[in-house]
Length: 218
Image 1 (cartoon, rainbow, N blue to C red):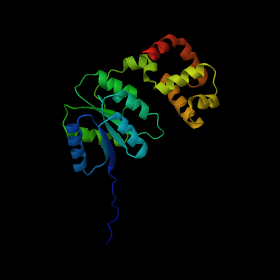
Image 2 (image 1 turned 120 degrees about the vertical axis):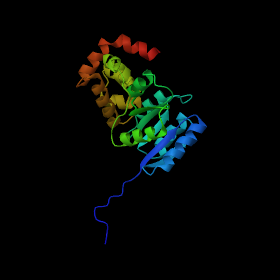
Image 3 (image 1 turned 60 degrees about the horizontal axis):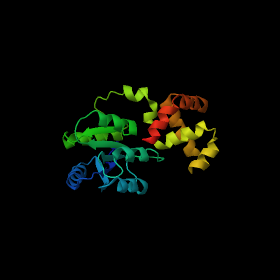
Image 4 (image 1 turned 135 degrees about the vertical axis):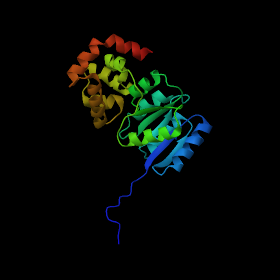
């Protein structure tokens, strides 16, 4: 008799990036052992992780915040600009609130301290694969007070061009991206600035221009 109602659950595809070879090996073993997951790749640098996001399809990436050269924060900002980016969990040393806050602002979906047992990280990854966001308590008042901090570099440059009167077609040409990508970034930009159209976004830019220019010079 056939099994009626039985549903095979596809394992969650994950990828790891950690600069510590011992940690990378240990994490790989934990994910390999757990039937909930399918380990797509494990790499030791931000550059290699970027490469696998272009060559492979996976749902969740677990990223060492202190990756050399590019760093975890910049890596997440770049990944979030892809059309179908994986969701990212930051795995970092210590419980200082600044790191979860920075990870959230960069676009991560979750945070786990290395002081937590590995089983806790696995559970977080499963929750995030289902659409959740998992962070320790983070005081986000500073982020809300300064929406510019939540913009990616691409979104900031588009905002500057927008304020110069560029049309969507001109934005696509100037920044070497498609028209659909321009619209995608502008929707995100409007949401983050709590505005509904380009005129309001331009007005916001000019009201905070000094702050934006200072951030770009840093």
